Amino acid sequence: MGIPNLQIACDHSDLPSALADISAVGDVVDILEVGTILMLQAGEEAVKCFRALYPDKKIVADTKCADAGGTVAKNCANAGADWMTCICSATIPTMIAAVKEVEEIQVELYGDWTYEHAQQWLDAGISQAIYHQSRDALLAGETWGEKDLTRVKKLIDMGFNVSVTGGLNVETVKLFAGIDVHTFITGRGITGVPDPKQAALDFKAEINRIWG
Amino acid sequence: MGIPNLQIACDHSDLPSALADISAVGDVVDILEVGTILMLQAGEEAVKCFRALYPDKKIVADTKCADAGGTVAKNCANAGADWMTCICSATIPTMIAAVKEVEEIQVELYGDWTYEHAQQWLDAGISQAIYHQSRDALLAGETWGEKDLTRVKKLIDMGFNVSVTGGLNVETVKLFAGIDVHTFITGRGITGVPDPKQAALDFKAEINRIWG
Image (cartoon, rainbow over all chains, first blue to last red; front, side):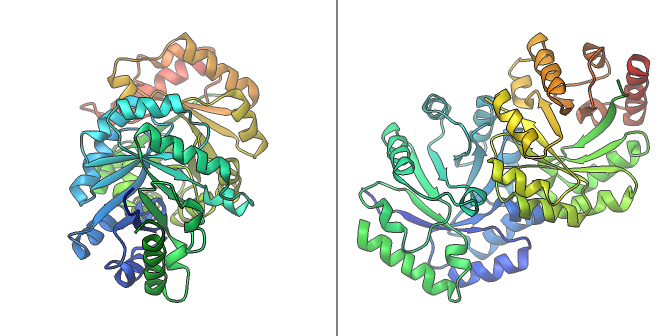
């Protein structure tokens, strides 16, 4: 079992505040994500800025691509992204088109996906899945539970590198002990606290304590 | 039965070429769409430019929003969009959050949605659905058929204003004769031909011939 990565999701509504946050934690985290909100606000400029500031980090463009996978993936790669996300309801041709243009595609799991779909994604050459507790679902009172952990384990058993995200903080990391999580993704668990760098260091320490 | 609208989808990878295309047809079409590809490349700037150039037209931000509906919708409304799209696999809380912030939400139908989902969207206050032939699916050889038209009619019967999109051109409009289509959405059916303004006029004439 490897040591899970830590990924910061920048779901800022403007580029300057996102840059301020990653400048605080970019050296600590493993992966930098241009979140969907930021992509829709600042576009490729956001990916280009992240790449310029952190030439050696993995950068994810969280496009949640649903169609025109080839074009969107090519645009993201051109701007400097290593990985890109597709929404699980994208068609298989969309995913196949996307996977040709970037290093890796991550499928974002929302709504009523099935393991049959998941096998099709694997067959299409997709290596990563993101198990997501929706922000809005969390606000509506839902949270991580045994049902979620079972699904995460099943996806890992199928062969996916699985990232988990949604309402995570340093305290919730231990819920995943014993599970071969690929990456913990957090936004406001790092950027929403008074000392983001310390929060990122605390995340890394807790991950190393459990998986190290 | 009303006369369907004509909507131009700008799925350009850069803002200048999108602006050139809408300047040719903006006075002819009813609705201007900042396509997903363009949103992910140029961000809110694209919506702001469309609004500045066409203060009186309906403008759609095709975000295909899957999460953080409230934030994304508020950002789109602030930039000048009237309508915004949500992907069908977004959770109901995401859709409810989005519908509060813009004039109308359109659900984009991809993958394995059901009429049970559709009823939940109606109950959440969503008035519009977009029946979509995926661009990548079209490239893979799929096309409009009786199965699609039956679904479109069923959604209209349920109470949705239904837009149709994907591989449409002036010749395919008549496939929908007798159906209360709300809007025909086309991108390269207008922008991909030598004379985009003439193509838009031909679309309008054909729509008026059938539904007028």
